[in-house]
Length: 315
Image 1 (cartoon, helix red, strand yellow):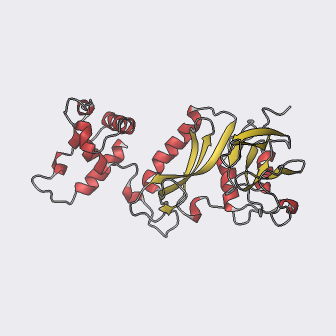
Image 2: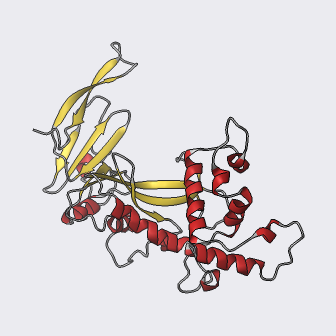
Image 3: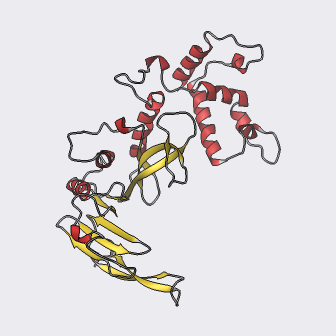
C-alpha cells in the first residue's frame, strides 16, 4: 500500500503545476507505519460514525476524540487522494486479453480473501447469497437490485457462517466473465459459482443453505457427492424437479399438510404458509411436527401449521 500510494502520488504530481495554496504541496512520502495508522482510523470511523469527515478532527469538548493525535486531517485527506494498491502503468486496457475490472484492488482482495478463511473456523451451517456494497459512482458493473435494502451498488456473492454472519469468502460480480464459467459443463453459471465458492469445505460436515435463485436437484446432488449438505427453497420448474409436485399437478391450500417426495439422495417438499413454497434438501427427513403460530385472521389469534423436523430434532 505504501509503495503504490507513493508511486501514484509521484505519477500524479510529476507534470502538474500546483498553485501556491494547493494542499498537494504538503504531500510527503508515506510509510508502512503511517498506512497502518490510516487503516486504524478507517476502522474507527466505521465504529464511531459522524455526519462529516471534519467532525472526526473537531475540538468541541463534547464530541472530540483522539484522531488528531494519530494524524492531521490534511494528512488523512492526502492519503485518501493518493491511496493505491497497484501500479496503474501495469494495467491492461479494457477489451484486451488479461483485462481485470478489479485490477486496482486485486492485490488487496487476494490478501483478505485468504485471511478470512485462515482466521476463523466456521460452524456447521453456512449460507450463500448476494449482497450489495452501496455505490453510486460511475462504473460499468454497477448493479440495480430493487428487492435489496441497498438498491444501487456493487453486487457480490458471499459465503457466510449462518449463525454469526461472518464472511468466509466473497466474489465481486463484474459481469458474465466474472466466473469464467465452463461452457462445456452441464452446470449453469450460478451452479458453477456455488461449487467454486465451497471449494475447500469438502467432506467437513458443513451444510449449505441458499434461496431458490441457486437451488437445483443437480447442484444438491453434486454437493452431496463432495460431502456437503444442502438445503433451501427451490423453483418448482427447475430441471429434474418431480412433476407430481408442480402447481399444475398438485393443488394446495393454506392449512393443507405438506407433501413430500424423496429420492435416495434428496427430499422435496411442497407446502403453503403465507404462499406456496417448495423446499429441497439433502440433509432433512420427511418427518413433521405441529407448530402453533400467531394469526390475526383466526378467531383465537393462533393457528397450527405443520413444520419439517430438522436433523437435530429428528428422532
